[in-house]
Image (cartoon, rainbow, N blue to C red; front, side, top):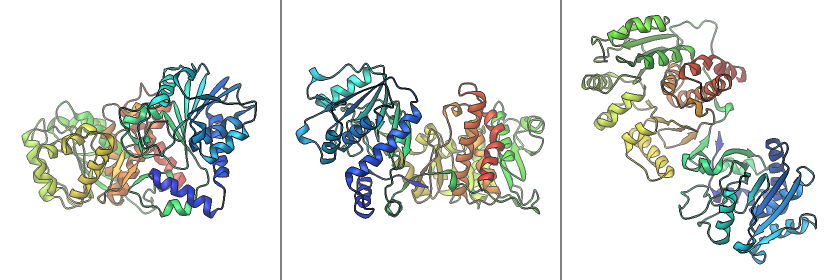
Length: 500
C-alpha cells in the first residue's frame, strides 16, 4: 500500500534523501521538475501558451525549473514571480539565475503588476505543501486573477493556498486547479470531497525520495494499490460447498431490486451457494431474476420479520432494501443475538443500528459496515469538516471493533485499529441507485470464500470500483446503472486473477 504522509514527514524525506543518496537539494529540485514536466507533456500534448506563476520559495523554484524545461516544448512561455526576491530561498535563486534572458521573469509585488493571464494554461507554483497560514495580500489577489481566467490550471505538488493535511481556513484564497501533479506521494487533502474543486484531477510522479525512509514512517492512512489485492485461489477439487455459503437477507415490497443486485453481485464474485432470505412477495421475483439463488421466504408477505439462518453459513449479509419497520428491527436484534461470525451490514441494517445504538455492542467483532455519508452521519452525528469526519470514522471502528467503508469518491476503509485505506478505483457514474447493494454482495462473497473481513472489504471496494470503471468506459458516466456494474464484475475479477 502507498503511505500517505504529512507535510513534516515529506520534508524529512527530502532531507534524508539529500543526506543519504547523496544529492544536493537543487539537484533534487531538478529531478522533481523533470518528473513534473514529463507528466505535464503527457497531459497537455499541444499547448500554445503557458504562464508559470511562482512564489519565492522552493515551490517557486520548481516552477522556474519547469519553465526552463518547457522551452521548445510549448508555444509561448511567460514567467511571473510573486513576492520579494530578497526573501527567496537558495534553490529558487539558483533556478532564477539559470533562466537566462529568454525567460526573464516579470516581478509582481503589488496589485498593479498582476497580469490578466490570457494564456491557454497556467502552471501554479506559488506555495507548496508546507503552507501554514491563509494566503492573503498580493498572493491572494493573484490567485483570484488565476481563478477568474479561462485558462486551464496545473498545480505543482498542491494547489497554492490549500493545506495538505488539515482544514484550509475559509478566509484564505486557494487556486482552483484543473490538474495537480504531486511529488512522490499523494497528499491527504486530495482524498477529501471539500478539496475536489481545488485539486481537480491529480497525478503522482516519483522523484526518487528514499523508499527506505518512506516505509519507516508511521502513518494511519494509506492508499490501496492493485498489487495489494489477493483473491482466494480456485482449486481443481473445489465445489460449491467450499466456495462460500452466503446468506443474504434483503428486500421488501417495492425494494426487491436491492436483493437482486446484491444476489447477482455475490454470485458473480465467486460465491458457491447463495441463500436469499426475502419476504413472500419476493419469491417469484428472485427465482426468476436470479435462478442460481436458493430462496427462503419470510413468514411475512411484504417485509423481513424473522431470520432463521441455515446451518453451516459462512457469512450473513443483511440490509439492502429491508426497510426499518419495527418487525424488521426486531428481526435484526434477534439475529445479532444468534450470530457469532462477522457479518456484512448495509443500508437499512445500518439505519436500524443508528436508531438503536444499544445494538452496536451486539454486532460480532470484525463485522463489516458499508454506509454512505448520510447513513454514517446517522451513526456518529455531524462533522465540521472532512478531517473531523475521518476522526469520527476511526473512533467508531476502534470503539466497536468493526470494519467500515465510508462510501464515495476514494472510499475510505477503516479497520478495528483505526487504520484508514483509501480506494483509487471508481468514478462519478457509480453515484446511482443500487451501486451500494452491488458492493455488499461482492464483499459477502469474498468473506464466504475464506478471506478475512478486512481484506475482503478492501478487495471488494477495489473490485467494485474497477467494475464501475469498466462500465463507465462501455456505457458512459451518465448512462450507467448498478446492473452495468454487476455485468462488469467478471472482467474486473478476471483482471485481478491475471495479475495474480
